[in-house]
Length: 282
Length: 312
Image 1 (tube, rainbow over the protein chains, first blue to last red):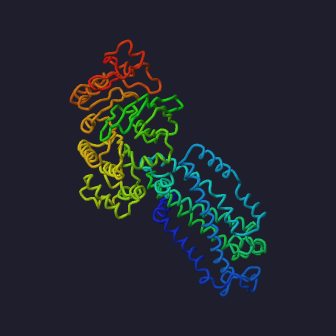
Image 2 (image 1 turned 60 degrees about the vertical axis):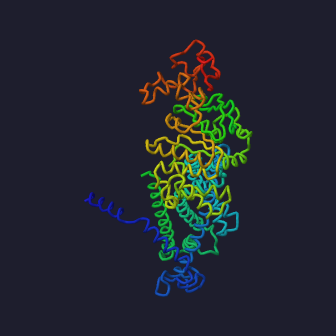
Image 3 (image 1 turned 30 degrees about the vertical axis):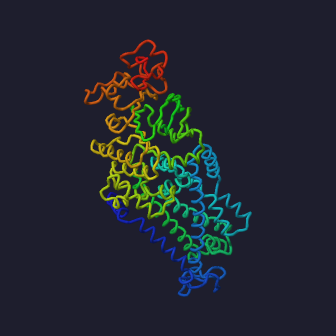
């Protein structure tokens, strides 16, 4: 019986195209965020009767001040995705620059940049953001920048190690021997050859950044004027949604966070797998 | 006329096990329109000389001496001036042709890159020039080859692509590092033909690094034999093959198949604990007492220079 179950599990995993599942799930959220105005039934700021249960007019009910929860959820996609993408963009860009420079130039440059990377890796990131967010004005732009400036070290490490592999490759030496400048070699010989490593890392950083934004907002340090999933959870928790068992208030945002992170993970992992195949590791 | 004059070049690599003396007090020169073959067994420092000419050695290398190119010391010029020299004056072709091309771009775009960047040619002109070059290098369908990726071409074809890239900028010197390594006999013939084309079309001087004596014999005007980081004999190729002077050169020629595969005794010495005196003396059948005491100087004999007390 167990053997049969194992077989079935294997069959399901082999037959399901994980990449496809990830991309289609992600596309759903992307469309929600792009066309929020057309899809959501109301504006998330409109007020109706507070604390109402799900009904035909309000599919997921309303919250403590009478906002439609489904509309909040749809508009929240936008904020969560912007924070995730923005932060990941900053982090990946920083990681690429630092990784390329330290891997290519080696020596003192490498020592200094990697020492800085080590320091950043040691910082407990969420507590630091909590402190900074508490000190600074709570705004979602600031949270995005903070996450971006704290999430680059792992990307830098990965980029550095791939650059180290490539810097002594014959085609890089050939480019040098034709007299191309270092910038030209970095941008047109090394960077295109490590894109396979960077893109999955970028995807996983988005997931991680969105997750962190949700955690911070849940703790009440997010931007109160912005409707994000984390903020919804925070209000559900603070205004008695949880103890009154109003599942339509706290479950959907939690589910959305999990679903987006899951879809990004799936895309990231399947890209990583593809990269391993390309690089002949499997 | 001398175009490259290397004087007392020494290269040492510091490693955890000790200093490796890869090249010791080597001097030679290259004339205009001349092909010089550097011949020696694996690990005797041929490639190190090539890489030190364009200063592409690893960071733990210590280089002393001078490399004069048209009166400029290449070991002293700034990095930006060196970039200019690498562009227009000295090209190098590395050992493994398939690894020397960027796998992500078509070979054509890699040929036109130096033309667009260094010669500021327009894209259309450089494509025309590239296709013309591919034709000279013996591609039967040059415009098809232009759009292919390195992995679609064989090693020999990639070698020709590299030669085309080296030729784009009409360099004064082309350094070819083991161009026939790992190729079968027929391809070696092709490569020899292509080098003859390069000599005819470009009027470049060529430094040919090889351990294949037959390639050296066909292509070079002069030949330099290296042993354990030193040049031990240098002179005209024809005379060398008629009568090698140094005992090691004789042993090298005797190891050819047509001479009956007679290998010299022993193995080449360690580059860390270098033997005193002449480096070949532990293996030499003619060794005298003085051989183990002092390194012999170059002695002239039959218009050639040879580093052996036999020709004092």
